[in-house]
Structure formats: C-alpha cells, structure tokens
Image (cartoon, rainbow, N blue to C red):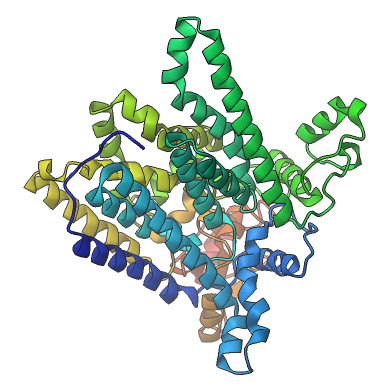
Length: 537
C-alpha cells in the first residue's frame, strides 16, 4: 500500500500496555475535570439541536449546530428504556452527554496511534498518541457538548480513509472514504473544505503517473486518467450528498435555489448569477445549505461573535493576520512546540519525494492550507478551538522522529524524557481547568487576559466556582456598573471589551490589577478606599 517502513518494533504486549495507559490517563483527566465545568456558551444550544434532531426536526434555530450533536443527546433519549432509578438519572444528566464527546475523542486518539503506526512503526505511534492525549486544548474540548472535537475527528478519519483509497483505489475503499466524507459534513462546516482538498491531494498523489504521460504527449492515457478521476469525483459527491441528506432527515431536499433566503454576499452572488436557472433544485437539505450561508455571513460580518481581541487590541468585524500563530505559541505546551520544530527540521533533512507523494502530503498539505486560511483569510478569530483540527496531523508527523528507534542516542532519549515530564507537569498544573490553559510564556496567570481572550480563556466555564466564591465573600460584586472600591469580580471577556460595552471596565483595567483569579476566567480586584480615591478623588 505504501513505501516500505520497517523501524524496530516495540514488543506488542508492552506497546499495548502503553496505549492502554495513555488512553486511561486521557479518560481519567477528562472525567475528573468534567463536574467542575459549568455549561459553556454554546453547549446548551448544541444539545438542544441534537435533541431536536432525535425528535426528527432538523430545522435551524442557529447557524452552526450540526447533526453530530444528536450523539450527545442520545443517552437522554434512551433513558426511557430503563426503569426508574440511578441508571435512568445518570442517562439524563448533562454530565453523561459530555461523556459521549470524551469517548469519541478517545477514538480519535486511537486513530492517531493507528495511522502513525502504519506510517512509521510502533515507537512513532506511541509518541503521536502521547502528544494527542496530553494536549490541553484537545483535553479541554473533549469534554464539551460542542462540535469542535467532532470536526477534529472527522477531518482525521476522512484523510485517513482517503489515504487508504489513494494507495488502494478499489471500489470498497472508495465507497468507505466517500461515506466518511459525507459523515464529516454532519460534524462542522469547516469540513466542507475536504472537497477541494481531496481533489488537490488526488492530483498531487497521481502526479508521478500523469506527468510522464503529459510530457510524452500520450493524450489517450491522460484522458483515461482524467476520466477515472471524474468518475471517482462523481461517486464521492453522490455518496456524501446521500449521507448529508440522511443526517438532516431529507429536510426540504431539492428546494429550488431561488427559494433560499441567503444572508452572505457569497451565496447571494451565486443565487444572482444563476437566476436563469431559477427552478434549479438543490440536492442537499435546506438547513444544510442555510447553515453554511449563515456561518459565512457571521464569519464575514462578525455578527454575534463579539469583538476580536489580541494583545490588548480590540477590532470590530476584522481579524488579526497571524492570529492563530500567536494563539498556538501561547496555548500549545512548549514541550510540544519544541518537538514540532525538531520534527520539521529533521523532516526537511531526510525528505523523500516518493514517500511524500504517497503518504505525507496528506498530512502536510491540509495543515498548510488550514494554517494559511485561518491565519490570513478567516475573520472570526475567537479561539484556538477552530485551529486544533491540524494538531492530530502534526502529531502523526512528529512520530516520524522515532521511526528509526535504534539510531536514537541515549542523550536524545534523556532529553525526550525531560520534555515528556515537563509536558505532563505543565498540563496538570492547570487541572481541572483546561480551557484557559496557557504555557509558561505567560508566567503570571492573572495576566493571561493581556494576550488572548474569548474562548481561549473565558467561555462561561467557571460559573460553579464563581458561585462558591460569592458564597464565601458575600460583599463581593460581580461586574459593577460603576467604579467602586471593595471587592469586584469581572469576567475576562467583559474586562477587555470582547462582550458588553467596549469601554465599560476601562476604569478597572487601566488603574488596578487583579489580586487573584476564579478558575482563571474571573478576575478578582480588591481595591481599598484610599487606592480608589487616589484614582477617583
């Protein structure tokens, strides 16, 4: 299937034990953190859409809620099958809905291990799995009823099965890959980019066959190649469209294009250009295309997202070029960043064109595409959670460092062990608060808000802790409307102006510093009367 890779293999029992240990640690960290999370800003809407879908209603009340959320709502739906008692109560809890995402993420982690093993061997697969299971950003979103981890997983599954198909272009592999591509469209709209990416990857993969035919002007052979490409493209489109229709319950499929009420400039332009085909039926469900249009509208206008924030600067309806470079620099553990840097340097030194075309382009080209897109073209820069889709691909590539285990020196193994220990200590130092994780570039965690905000730090996840703090400090006031002395508590997003009135808390941010945080999301200011009067005489 692929170019031969024969690194030394870890004895299977030892390898299996290590995989189980990593997955168990990942699962345990999530479970122990779960009850500490209040519902974040989007979770209840995702859950509601999943509940509606199980009730056979896929109509939209929001732009980005997707059918995959039905998985989170399923335990509650099935609870009626159990007799009254603890088990039924457990099935109905929001906690259980979150468990579904954890289980899915564990499956994604195993796919990272499996793919890295096929490419680079056992040692590589263990490294890739370790990086996934100890990434605080992946941990943070693995315990939420949102679609971010579903997008991470379906991207990875889609690329994996397409890689299998490219190397073994059988109808079986093609149908499976097309089916997974369709499923990905039910997870998050970011996955719509898989369609052009698949075409690009196929062209690059078969370039070594097509180029000689083109150079030698063997047009009949080229025609055969392109005919097969068109045939497979048609098959992928038909299968994936069928899956999308099933996922959205065939809701108003074949609605004429002119009957849609689009909001975004892109879809309005398409609709206008195709006016002559007014009765052209659209072969996807109405809420699927409607949601894609709504997402595009919000991303371009910023409507409903609040303000963009980076390094103390607020912007309205405009992103920051390179935003996700900065977010990754601050929120990805330093140990992982070092490994990625070493991997890229090592990769360039040992680059093999044939192995790249056959295997690694499917890791690198999507990573490059999404890095450019999110940093320079995407406007709704409201958290690293959008960018984590590339992390598993990078972690699989990092596994290539250990493809030749016997050539790794003792010193390199010691350095690797130190980095692993540093990674675990850094991640666990935030337990159980993983959404606001920042690496050690931000040494004083009280001031993380000076760098990033929004869902990087404040996504409404710490309300339980706020309630406990207020019970112990009844004189504290939450987000007072006017300047005051005493104890004031302000959420990060309100403080910097991402939400609410832009300048509402300038008096606090510019004149005082927080003395502590509440789960890193709320900042506590204790202002004495003399301090207050020095600023506001």
